[in-house]
Image 1: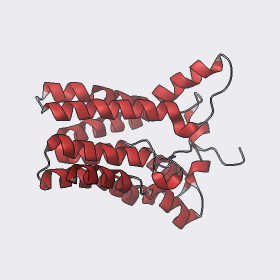
Image 2 (image 1 turned 180 degrees about the horizontal axis):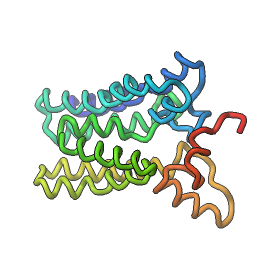
Image 3 (image 1 turned 120 degrees about the vertical axis):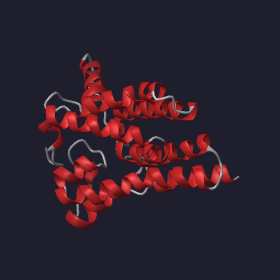
Image 4 (image 1 turned 60 degrees about the horizontal axis):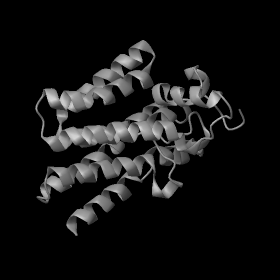
Length: 217
């Protein structure tokens, strides 16, 4: 029973939409109608306020860290703690309170890793910084998540940490392809859009055009 309660709590905690709240409180907008449609720090950065990315990001990190820490603190074991942390990521990506339309999960991933595998946080930050430098953040971030399981093996982490990193990759792939249930185009373009979603995290090749979309565009 404590294990089930912790996992459910992790999901409900992850479902609290920090970025959505920032959009509503600061600009009175629904982030699901802007840019990529994801409730994420990227949407806050481009459509709400750049300074708000910091508190939103820290709170999203805390959503992944808290249930993971609680699992260890309560003596439920590392595997249970990691499952609870991943449940928070699932809540962040598919929040109960927003019709299961949420973010991409990188911030709560970092929260989980901060407790269970701090080197993983530095690994993802390195890839995010490199992606920002190269102006291919989504692609390079995906490479960071995809190689995270290899890093856990190279550094001889517990098996639970390695499996959790695989879970992070699977969650990322599913969320990018699903894209908050954004309809796919008909015909042969469908396959190309799926490739764009997986590697570029958008439906078109031009990144700026995508992230700056408005409800009437």
